[in-house]
Image 1 (cartoon, rainbow, N blue to C red):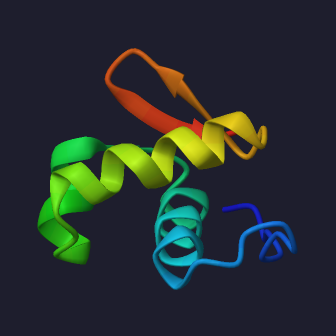
Image 2 (spheres, rainbow, N blue to C red; image 1 turned 90 degrees about the vertical axis):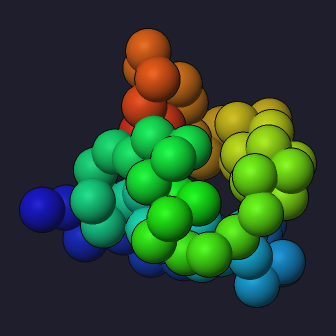
Length: 67
C-alpha cells in the first residue's frame, strides 16, 4: 500500500474523506464509496468530479483510482 499525504488543494471534509478512502484502498467504485462512507450518491458525483478536475483521482472502468 502506498502512503499518500492529504492534498492541500482539497478543503471539503467530504472531499478529503473520499480521497483518503480511494488512496488507501488503491481503488473504489461509486457503490463502495456510497456504502462504506454513507455519502449520498449525488454528493459523491460532485466530489469525484472535483477530485478528477484537480488531477487527484481518475476513472479506470467503474473504479476510481489515485492519479
